[in-house]
Image (cartoon, rainbow, N blue to C red; front, side, top):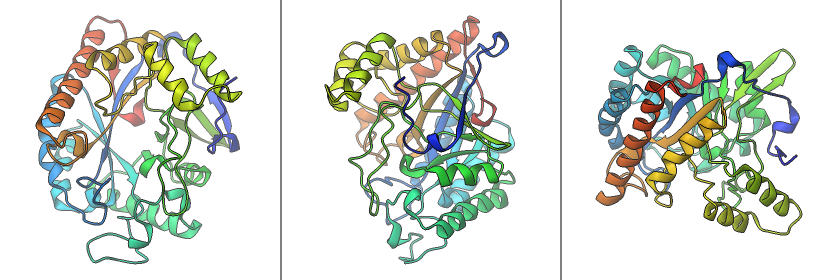
Length: 344
């Protein structure tokens, strides 16, 4: 009733992913936007110091049998600082390498600043590019991954969440199996691109679903958000749809009721709320529990959330406790196994 899917999904046939008894055990995926340092505040200079922290993060993942998916930008697909860290992990079968399109750091460039950045498209959404330029940039990144990592990427996340119908069609045509460019209960309309604002995912599905176009299909796996208590979120969405509440105020109310925690980096959520989200969404029977973060967030001083030692230590604690709970649930045979995104 409230699943409006007004971003681009209404252009495709949509199937819900069935929850058969054989597939009732949720998969846990960790999706890492693997990119330059502080891409939010300093997009015109490409540095990869955060790659030095990936081995420690990978050790944490392996400690708890978690297999991360590194969704990499062009700089991480081509520069030695990233390749020498990520390629050995891939070769050991301990991660997946996916496709994360930052249009400002991916060739061809219309206005090259000489530092690996297209000044014409800084912080632009890929949905804003002309058709031919989008296809060229998306293909250049795909080929760079194939050349430097020896794999064809199967998973994708749009840079700044800015996907569109064209992106989905391109992914289908290029044999991708998964897109993960949705963050439910989130409105990015206050985040500007080049000429447009960001997408509004407020009414998007909490569940994974399948997009179809003829004989082609693509799994859409949203980042996980705590949707309990479900009755209240449905009532609040109804109030928003009738303009009785703003999206912002409805979300605040839902947070007070115990829901709304997003499995993304934030100092607004307690460690307990992250753990409850994993448990609650597993009990609800979600096919996939998707924890999303950025490579710069596992490195001190290279992202807003980990700019201080306190923030850095807090977020490492969030990750370790979340992975521990997933591991405990799995060991207790109650529910979750960690997989690569393209296997979820």
